[in-house]
Image (cartoon, rainbow, N blue to C red):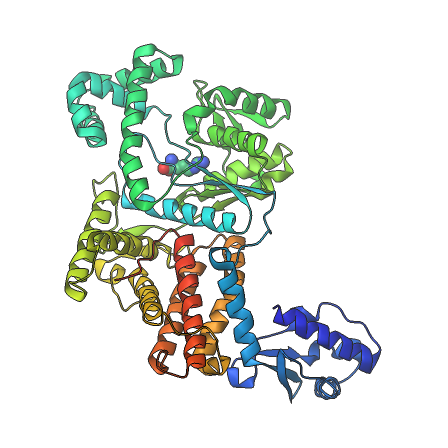
Length: 567
Ligand code: ARG
């Protein structure tokens, strides 16, 4: 039931009847009154005073006269220049609950994105580096966006644009051949690779010739030397194996791992096209796209030695994605530090004459600090994500042990709660805000947290288990109270929340929504008896509980979090 459309339709005919005018778009003027006692929808008549040449209160009165109540609208009141509509509670409850329970996991789904592709570049880790807590946001925001777009009917393509190209890999091979061994790296994995890299940087201080060795090996990679490629491929494999464990724990996956090196043979086109379109200019031996008119430093395409850059690869990748996926949108979930980089890349593509440059968006996000400390790989102040996740599960387990020692399958629940808490915390604020990760906030069961929402969901499940066998003949009078109404309103709002989350690429709207729904349900739960009322009232309240349970579960799942049935 689309209430705004229904009200707009009724208003339309009243205006036609009373003023002989046809006014479209009335639906867009409807507002939600600040206080529920003023009604469920309000129509501000001053929006019509120009067209109808009358004062708002007069219009309100005229339209109210002869306005017939129906099965959906119980009554209408004039308040100054406003018309306030009061819904028929029972019909509203039935409409919302029918919709939620019929659609189930598909509630809020739409065909909005039918036939449209969204490319999402997220996580995009670097080879020979371990996954640290700084990678959490890109990974989880990207994953949530992927789920959300799919829910709205888009076809999303998840891309892990691996950082697998650059001179540092020459240094790494040099370091490996000098100080490493197969066994040592086989055993130590990415940690061993990182140790080798650190050693390289320490020793190069005293022995500058090491730089030449690094350059030598990178050149070998570029030339396709078999030994260099073999070692490099092995480093890559180790890194991906390491990351796969984390991705599995987080429940994240990708459709493509085409990283920077994938574009090696696709860069010629970029350079040729830029040159041919007169965009490539020489600058101190390098070739750049001048962006002075756009008040940006030039976008460097080729270095003096002819080597390509990060930006060159991103331009090649954008062209490739457009050709290959014909995206309607192409998103880059990358920290705000790369803001300038993406503005330069997008602008360059626009200058190449591609109007789809406007469909690319840098979905940026803030930094994360850990227990009050800012993190820096360079200063060796790193917190590895795997350690954080492990600790989260351990802590969740200790809490479960204390709260519900009898719980079956405690290990699995602790895993879902621990991991869920970390993900939820990461997604709870608008992207651009920096995140201060503190354990006592992440795992606070009473705050606005993942565990709180999961706990509310488990509460619904438990109510439903206890209510099994209650005959399903709902009497919606049982939901005629402000607390139930607040739950219904939240449920009704959900599809709109999903649309807005995609429009703004902000999964936090869904995380916030889940907290609001949980809070609304909990207030209802504390104020009203669910079981042991008349069968009809209990049935209605159980139906509300079932819908809240379904939508809590769905909200969490869309942002990548599981919802245990018992906690
Ligand atoms: N690997 C890069 C980094 O860690 C992020 C890559 C983001 N994606 C892109 N298409 N540039 O900084």
